[in-house]
Image 1 (cartoon, rainbow, N blue to C red):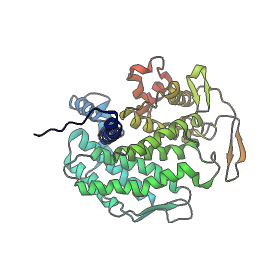
Image 2 (cartoon, rainbow, N blue to C red):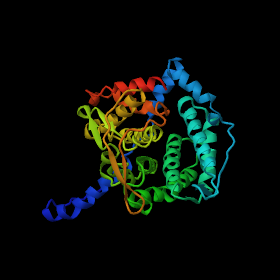
Image 3 (cartoon, one colour):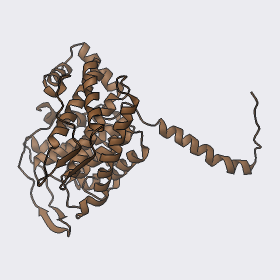
Image 4 (cartoon, rainbow, N blue to C red):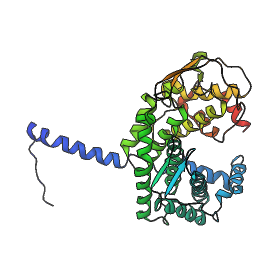
Length: 375
């Protein structure tokens, strides 16, 4: 093979080095993502399979609950697809068809990943192919942005689980990616940038968080570093209530407890915040970004605060002031809300995962552990 010698001069170095570095960055970017790597990794699925094969608890009980749910069946009947999904009063709401089909796609994807059930794999692919070949827009009143966020991140996670399945053609996988990039992502991005033209504090934390999660999941699914970075940057320094410092504005007990932005609203929505930000942080962690531990475990402090109060204990509360509407009309909450106190959401396992990590020394999440054990 003939070789060529490039003179080692400052001229050639200045000329070629930027080109070489650009190429290296492109190669690194293309291989930077862990797959599968949304809510679970290959190591997670292998562990689940191993525990189930040993009939170990509590894995077996959890698996049986999954099997008992009708959305986990390979004979699930699709409720969609639809060309236009509507969510919000004053519109012909039909979004229930989308979220039911997403639940079925995700739960069937778990059955394939964990036990290799190809009938379930085919059902998940059937659902995703049907929607990616039909959906053109998500519409409605402001609630359309809840739809774009919640269903966006859930659908992307289901697709990430099915990545690599031989029964999903590369063309249809690409079509699904394009649906996520061209329908869901623009809405996610628009909301975080403009907040539906409202005062920046008008929308509760969960509105930001679901759209942050969607952008992050789409970035992983589509190997899109820019989208992934956009979501991480917003978490760290975004202007809205979903970013970490706005979501947890007050800390107590030397940072062990963190008052969540919706604690004065009701515990149902505050628990939703824990669910959404937990999913966000888990996806980020699976890609090497530890947002659970950001700012001295600030997200975990919010989990501890919520768990402590919903276990029936008293917690400190600082008056929360914000602006609402388009003109930032002043509003205030002076006490923590008792509404929906004690309710649970099926997401606390995510927030307990950091317990096994060495960097969590000094953060035992004792309140979160007790709260999770009763759900």
